[in-house]
Length: 241
Image (cartoon, helix red, strand yellow):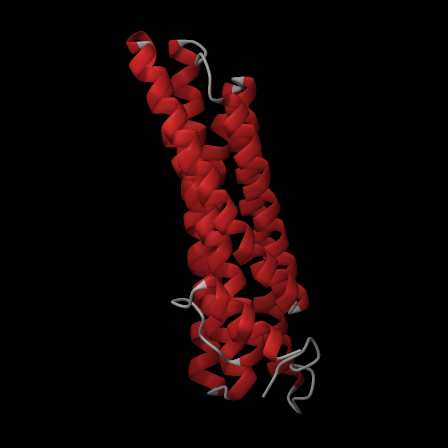
């Protein structure tokens, strides 16, 4: 059964409808929290804004709490409702998605901690262009992945998966350039390493956004594409149109 946005409105039990809608709404709220963490973390690094970075670190507690809340809601639905078909896929997808969102929050916190550390040691000599560029791409991936989840939009989800491949290539290029820079100027090693760790965190956020997009494909057509290559995913999505 291919699922669309109206697939969860047909239950006789209005309470069941409400429970399903609640986990979708809470997932969206958690996604918004993770987005703010990522955006603020990137900006705190670029602007050397310690106050904003500390806010990102504190916000991680709220994201973790939200994950546990949604997880409990999903467990209750599984235990009480014994969902099947598209409803079961929804609950499974949400439980997986909140894990990725929680890890996105963790990666954003790592970037914020690097921003705090770099503020103490002085500005890095280079690397902010790469942080801004890759950060913008990753933030857009996360936004699109959450939008795709909310709208059950497989085409948008596919675009996120495709963008992740591009981000991985840009990350590899940036890392090579920064290694070269450290070799040329050993005095910069500590500060450039902070940038490299931040870029690594951004690349991981992109991976988690890709995972969210893959859950959308599973949610819509029931196909698990987590271990499929990009060509197989494209074929899967296009065959359902």
